[in-house]
Length: 75
Image (cartoon, rainbow, N blue to C red; front, side, top):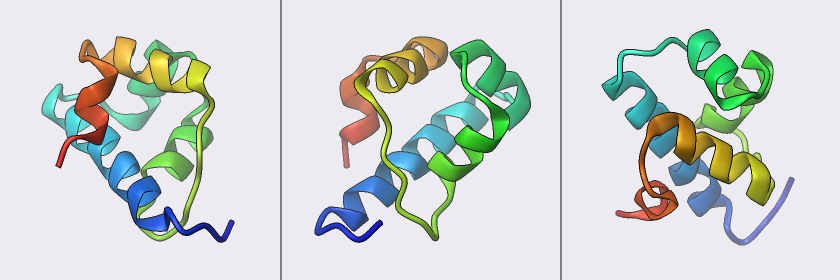
């Protein structure tokens, strides 16, 4: 997907990865807790591809990480 917000998508995925690892969770364990598939999470966290998420998924990820959604967009 080509978008002018490519950098923001990548940063979002890396933030998800950062907080997941901070909590000591594998992709598999975190994906299950967030109610998404492991392969979907891998696409979100990938630093080499742009992959957007729905609002539903965004809130599920933040809930599973036990952080406010805004934390996933901070610099």
